[in-house]
Image 1: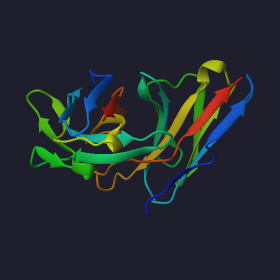
Image 2: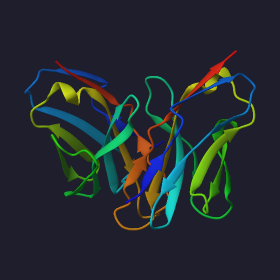
Image 3: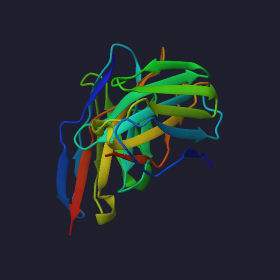
Image 4: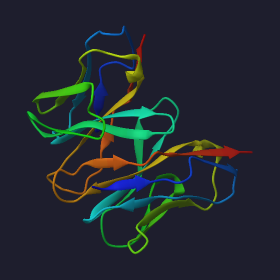
Length: 114
Length: 114
């Protein structure tokens, strides 16, 4: 069965600084990978996804992520954060075979301060 | 525009009540999911359905059941609500015809059991 680990429960950062949110996964089969963002009192919104091809994926709001198969990682990055990026970020994995169960990590709260 | 609608944003129920949480999607998606979200635990999968009348247990199915009589509607049932089921519940749907699509989420239902 697949699983997702987000080691950092909270990441504080100053505005305009770069940030990296870490995600590692485990799966015995090929997977698709996703990052979602959740703003307060809202549902989840897709930031970006990796399906195949180029390992560097660009998403909305200036975010990007790099798929590293050998390290089973899919870390999320942004070169310069804004106050409005304060939110919770979830990494998710789904297998591309079988029942396609969508599994999430425990989330990372990004706190951007001035 | 893609739409996943959960019937209530907020619910307060008494211990022992039978509770129905409804989710409707308008995208003709095959897969539908129910998650609960708790601080520090991320999104945990309760049940998912990959077709009408088909369901699979997720990671925490105890105390819950589901119903999918029509493709667009996926109901989560708490047979006898307990205080430890106080949580945010999120519904999602996803297509599988093209096996690389992301999941779309409803706004969530915050359930309080007193």
